[in-house]
Image (cartoon, rainbow, N blue to C red; front, side, top):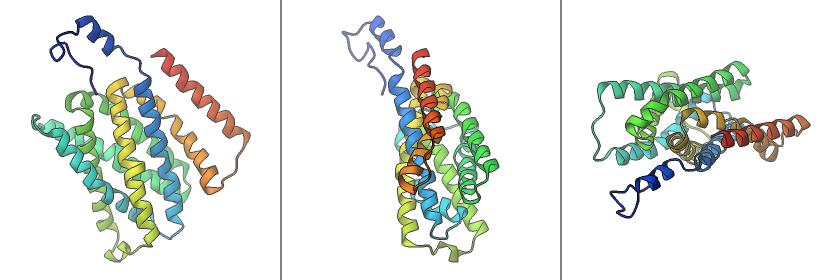
Length: 253
């Protein structure tokens, strides 16, 4: 992930290292875009799952239950051989996990269930706060370790929420819900979270957050292709504007 240093390569010069550090931001922006697009597929999967009569609390529990082993393994792997977290680190990681993954995800799932623009907007705000606040912590702990820790904590919040609010009988859901939740946990949760955090490590939290503008547009396009939702000229205009904004962002950086 990082360019080789002159210590690792005797033939490399400090000037070459500086050029490598100032490499094009396009790979990082591409990672952020890919992560946003994959993450936006969550909304489509959630809408498909709601057809089987499951509620937001149960659905997000299954999603995070399947994602928890992946993020826990990531946190363990990325933290091997590194200094233990301080009390401050744990508090920050817990706050990021609560805001960026637990709260944002729950509000988003609830918004998709009730078609509530307050809820969906609040979810977007919560996740944006997480992206901006995580920038400094990424530098301290590394993208992979922070991702694994914060999201594991969020998974535990989501699972605990289910057992506090729902009876055990609510675990009985249609098999289709299980498969959709598994797909949501891997393709639309673990993979995009990883990509976005790696993008933050390369281009910074601000650029990664702005690149996330592509997410809502990709959700709309997938809704048209998969759910048969209506296609209008406004969608075309919005897509063009979003892509133009991302292109302008890439040039500026």
